[in-house]
Length: 76
Image (cartoon, rainbow, N blue to C red; front, side, top):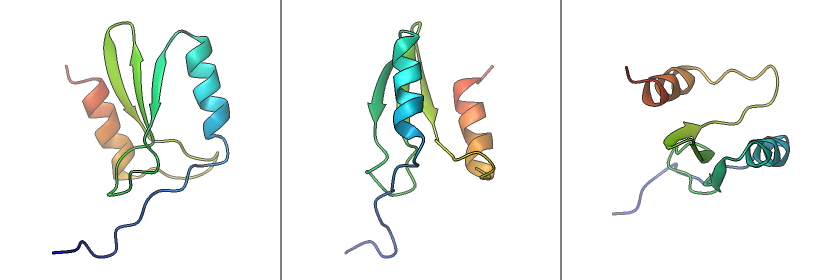
């Protein structure tokens, strides 16, 4: 069976700048924006913790995905 209506994501224009800033702070960053299937844009490791991040242009709304990312990165 072939999935329908699933396309790989296109990186936001500010993604490279955000990745550079995170790496400058000492984070490790794996870019997965091309995975598609509604995956987040980045997997970020920082101080022994991993975070899933969705990159958005200023003014764009992440909607429910932003809430989900907050729950994953701050579970307790």
